[in-house]
Structure formats: structure tokens, C-alpha cells
Image 1 (tube, rainbow, N blue to C red):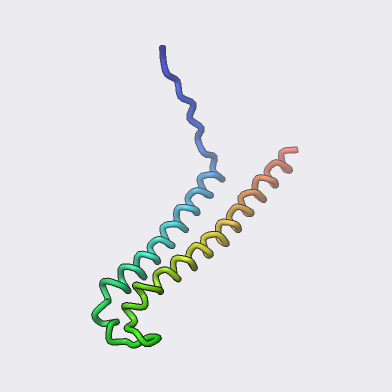
Image 2 (image 1 turned 90 degrees about the vertical axis):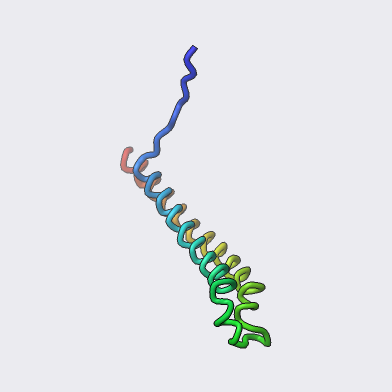
Length: 100
């Protein structure tokens, strides 16, 4: 017996939606990596001489800043995806109305 699997391909709108989603995720994760790894590890020596709230800036970034940036990025992602979802749903509604 043959095991037939049903694969559904994405249409153009779904592909655009998915590409925008992946692009947004890539950008936000890159920002988080740069802040977390760059500010807390790679630039630790130069930033350790900069006082910030009573501690060195590199310590603050690695202990607090990266976490705050991550929370901000989650908020940005939620807002941007809400907009993207609305755009996608609006385009589907317009397509269905034009087919009637």
C-alpha cells in the first residue's frame, strides 16, 4: 500500500505573510543577540569604565538591559504581528468580496 500524504501549498498571500513574519523574527532576534552578547560580553571591557546607575554599563546591560530589551522586543513583535494579521485578514475579506 502506498502511503499518500496530502501537502497543502501556500498561496501568494500566505507566502508573503510568512516571509514578513520570518523577517520580523530574524530582525528582533538579531537585535536581542547584539544587545545581549555584544553589550554584555564582547564590549564588556570598554563598557566597564562607563558608570550607569552606580554600576558599570556592561554589568547593567548583562543583568538588566538585555532582559528589558527582550521584553520590549516581545511587545514590538506582538504589535507588529497584530498589524500583519489585520492586513492579511483584510486582504482575504477583500478577495472574498471581489469574488461575489
